[in-house]
Length: 309
Image (tube, rainbow, N blue to C red; front, side, top):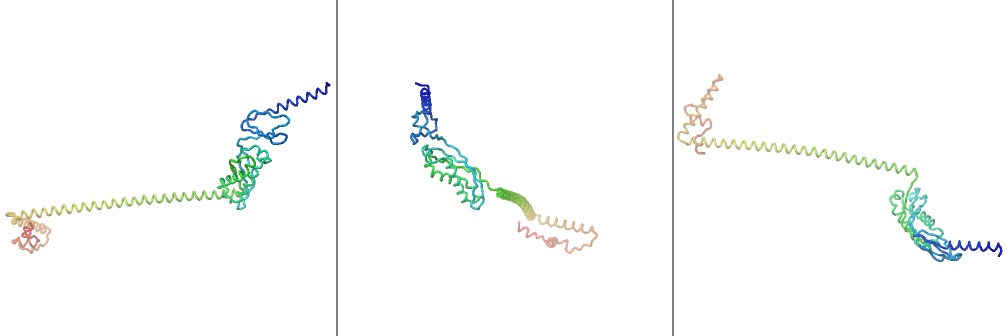
């Protein structure tokens, strides 16, 4: 055998050994290998040890079955009120059918990103600028719904989509900031006015309570004074009634009438003496010897007093 033949057979054996070694595949967990037999889909290798037929079977696609997050690049969208905004997001999905992910679409990641972008533009176009910041959940749900309509054909599953940023133009942002500042100033002014209102109400309530307390105190004072005066009058009337009763009882006793007449005469004479000391002329219209006429002139009726007693 010539040297050339040896080299050819040696090269052949080396190639066979390399192919045999390459036909041994160990598939990691959460991976899927697509195997083709002479250019046609043959089988999908799951995790574990696998041995392929050299020269006839080969691995053409390798898929990761775990959920992955894909950035959706920023794009310009126009809202319903013709304001241009820049929107980007994150798409969460996973391969659930490796065969369809390999043959159902050229590049499922690129296809999902493009469909997400077109859906975002369509949804943003139905919303006004102010609502785009409020309707993030609506945008996310709409994108997930549209993507899941084709996800089965692409062998993937869309779990969720999250809008990262909605960036309006600088002029619009400045206008929004001014509007926000005006709204904050309005709220601050409203809060100050409410505080001033509460302060005035509290002050007026305090004055009202003070006036009520003063009026209640004045009322109670007058009631107490009236009760005191009433008690005083009652005491005086009781004392007067008691004195009258005592006087009547004294008159009714033997010699009582003469004692009263004597007492009245003494008081009358004493009053006359007091008047005379002032060097005044005194006219006595009554007869001092007639005590009964004198007492009647003074308004004292002994008989009537006796009857009352």
